[in-house]
Amino acid sequence: MAFRLKLVPVVTNIDFFRWQWLTFGISALAMVASLVLILVMGLNFGIDFKGGTSIRTESSTPFEVGTYRQALDGLKFGDVSITEVFDPSFGTEKHVAMIRIGTTDEAGSVTAEQIGAIEAALKAVDPQVQFASVESVGPKVSGELIQTAFLAVAVATFGIMVYIWLRFEWQFALGAVVSLIHDVLLTVGIFALFQLKFDLTTIAALLTTLGYSVNDTVVVFDRLRENLVKYKTMPLVEVMNLTVNETLSRTIMTAVTTALALGAMMIFGGDVIRGFVFAMLWGVFVGCYSTVYVAKNIVLWLGVRRDWGKKDDKSAGTQFAAPGK
Image (cartoon, rainbow, N blue to C red; front, side):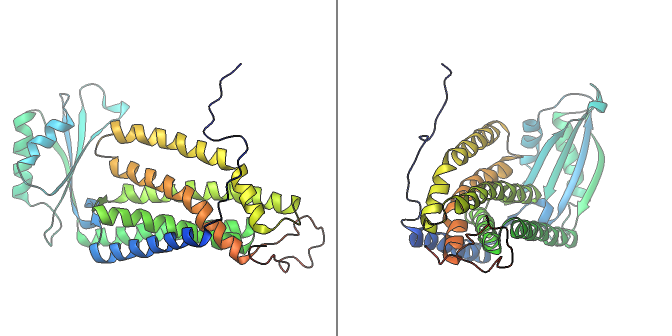
């Protein structure tokens, strides 16, 4: 007999909406707290968003990123990111690194003297190193990147809302959008609380989290709509509980397998992607929570159609169940 791992029983009967006001209140409080943290403490922007200099190095000998980082530690730069660049076209005699250095001055770039000090420090540990290119990002460009990044998140959220509105009903779309705003605010809030580096990789993690969260939400919404047609006389809150219990195994298995992959990346991926992985891990957790305790609560309070099985669409969109019934 084949062994099957079961994280939850095949049949569950958990009352997820027993404390609906408390759970939604906690979510609302967490959103307000995150907004306050963002406004009061601010975000620890990385080089992408506050300006700095990118240096591309080339060497004929292999190098260790840790060795380069130790060589630059003595120069007292506040924000240094070093990544090794891999490309099959480089061959065995070309080893490339990308060094990104953030600055706090108004110019937003590293001075010529500092570039010389960096080159001397690296040559001390790797005499073959050469600077292939040096590029600076000023505060103006960084400010535009911030606006573009948050615009990307807003456009993605709006697109998701339109899709769910067309796929289901406006109540589902509103619940999903509030759930996504909840996920984004809590993720950005945790970055503000712990002053974690916030850069373009974090924006990528936010967009990925939006996709993950809405995928889980749409799966549960689709099962909910099927159950609303199947159980026409069952109170809405009971249909929702039944739906969440039926999809619970799928939700937990998806979250656990995703978390296992992200956990391995967190441990072995290094400092370069640690912020991205942390944002994803946190997003998986809050995304699963918000699907049930934010999106579903809003749909429950607004009420939904119970007549999808009817062929006559003259009354479409006019028959709603009273909240909780």
